[in-house]
Length: 432
Image (cartoon, rainbow, N blue to C red; front, side, top):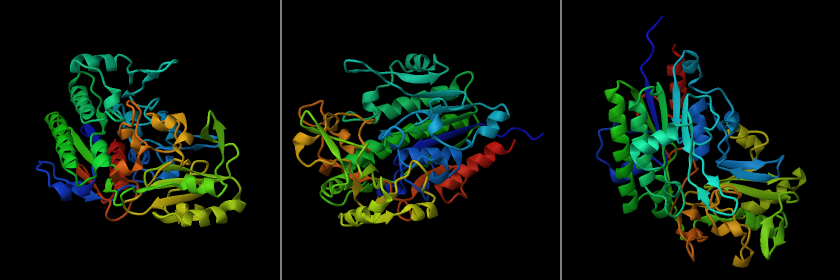
């Protein structure tokens, strides 16, 4: 029997694109290199690919949220691990008796690992939030809070107050997890630090340069701690955030579909809410990707024709093209998939008159909106309402291919793509 491979640390850094390295030329001992991103350069699809070594067509995570046909509504940022299909890259290692931990990964609750911690707030019945994290073993979060002398602050994780402080907490927690008795043999850590100011100000901004220096200041001590323990390590980004080039780079497919009679609403208290039970066509959006669901196949040509007239749409992929690109997953993917042009992104709103906006439009509500809303990174008026001004967004992501490489370092220097990194982990952890 061969000796067991050394223990591992895997760091996934949100928005760690190669463009940042080229733009800002950070001073770091990490030997960074570029690789191609995954087929969908979005948070949850990338995380699902890294943990299964499968493309979206097989792991089923087609965006960071999607339309659930049986419930007739979209859900974003759900946390159940059962949403990710496919065998995990660590399955053989765990069967061999090694332990695995996940820190702050999406869709990690209920995962077959030995340690997990992830934000899990409690929404009070009459409003307000109880800040909390889910952890297994259950006392783990309390232990981390005591060691770090502060709790995890969800308001720093997303929204107008999102900032690098939350990444520091996660990195410090990860260093402690590596050092404590019973540390997992393989620890996977997600750092969100770059996501915020790159979307607010764009990747070429001074704020982006500061965010890059900050995330490296979080990563380098974590890597050093792993090396002291003799751990192998892998660092990778999940997508590159590109600049929004137009004054307002937002594209509004639901407005176009509503004007054409395909998107239906119902009026409640003078606000227009979507009627997904009767809508003939609608978009569920995530940055530079929009899934278009069409109830009646006979409407497909007209829907395609209408959306093709939208400024900023680079591609309209039908089901066959999605299959060819390894993007299509039955019951989750749209009948059409829109890809935004460089520097453009898809916004979910269907209304133009401000009085029609649903109540959640001005709230930090990541679950009810039929799409990711980066405007939540800004305050609206009056605070604590969030902004609805799409022109504020200066960075976006989702496109793949040449020019959208992510930065990586550590294990698998031969890898040329994000998927190959995942396959490398799968092979290494299967060598038992």
